Image (cartoon, rainbow, N blue to C red; front, side, top):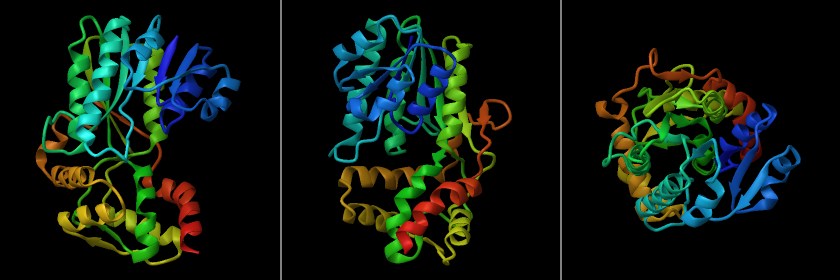
Length: 298
């Protein structure tokens, strides 16, 4: 039996569907059973509960062959780091108590940094905690920047007509589609071919810059959407103005500063320790984001 946290989310749902198609017993953890009905129809079991509740997770994890773990984003908390550590602690206690033998953990490039990378540094703590569970075999999937994060720019594009981020237009870094993350996560869960503590990166076919993303979006939308390099302070204030708590916005400001540092990609080697996905940023913009762009810009 496999337990999938975030079982109705971007990666979890696709992982659950792959495992079910392979004939595996799957339990998905969700706070809303109604969102999981299509997976239930395919044979999944739903465990309804809160990730803060380690007793609930312990009962759900008992007898599991493997768990897919993650800390889901939560945009209405005042202290995101505290929230991340609370969830990480709850998951780890449950994995230990239920004696789970295998975990595939969704993490992020940069999660080796305990400080200095905003929300990504929060994921360091889940990695560190899981690494210290006796006898646990854990694989940390350090994913690149989700293509799907670009949906968060639609309001800016609609109202300002630009994409503004505190990076140089030509600064390239690793992006990835959530489907490619789900593909490698499901593969490793099915194979259970990892021992001890290990890391695998998950990235797209190549690195991209926000300048390139703006060009793809301009082409797909039929409107010129230029990229503008903003200051970190401008970005933070823009997020706060959009209703995001200051501590979260400031964390993202810190993350952007970390992305341009040489230490952010420490340990990453596209040739030797990365799963290189098949979906390009161009394909994502043309086949997925374009539909939202057209809707937003009319």
